[in-house]
Image (cartoon, rainbow, N blue to C red; front, side, top):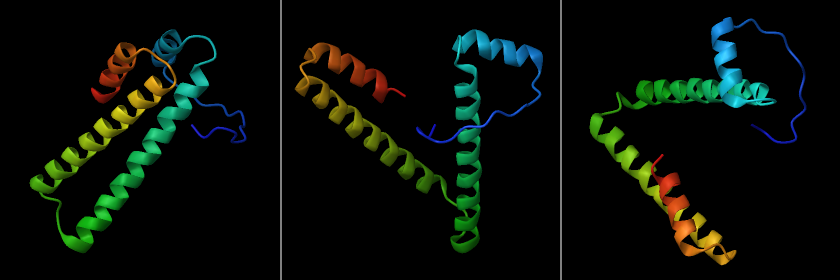
Length: 109
């Protein structure tokens, strides 16, 4: 969610069971944030789909090998980010064991 962005209240209609399940999961005050993040995620996926469609129109279908290479790159980037986060936590005085555990949890995503 973009911090500092102006907000406006809207009315949407949702299936009651879905809305209540989300409300139970996110707790008080988390419903709007959850819905906003879901909409942002959907917009991101739509834009990614448009980018892939454009790419495939220009250069042909994305191959399984290209997908595997991109996934390997993504995992390596996540690993490096987790490593940097652990280093920052240790630099901030957090015990190395705790920083290492938290970094491993983030890298497993």
